[in-house]
Amino acid sequence: MLEIMLKSKIHMATVTDRSINYMGSIGIDMQLMKEAGIKPNELVLVADVNNGQRFVTYVIPEESGSKKIVINGAAARLVEKGDRVIIMAFGMFSEGEYKGPKVLIMNDKNDVVEIREG
Image (cartoon, rainbow, N blue to C red; front, side, top):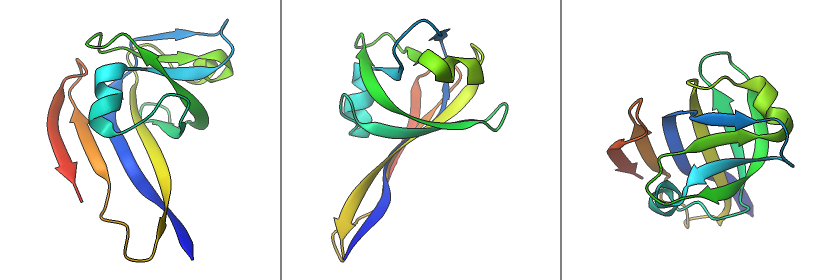
């Protein structure tokens, strides 16, 4: 049996921008995506720590090193610039395969301050 488990998490990232007039997605700095093991177009669950909103979307890459976290489309109505978000990606694992998530812990400038694995 396959189980759906947390694969990667970007914890407490700061929303740098939002754009309602976009087809939808969350833009994440490519460098952060790579560090977290999140791929372009991957499904993610996003939780806004400031207001409790949660939404599902897909990831598009932002310029590497830009530290951008951009909420686009309808979800942009659920966040404000400066809100802190938790971005979670999940995977399907067979019994014994799962070793725990990779978690990037961020500061308010979207710098990685700690990486936890397992």
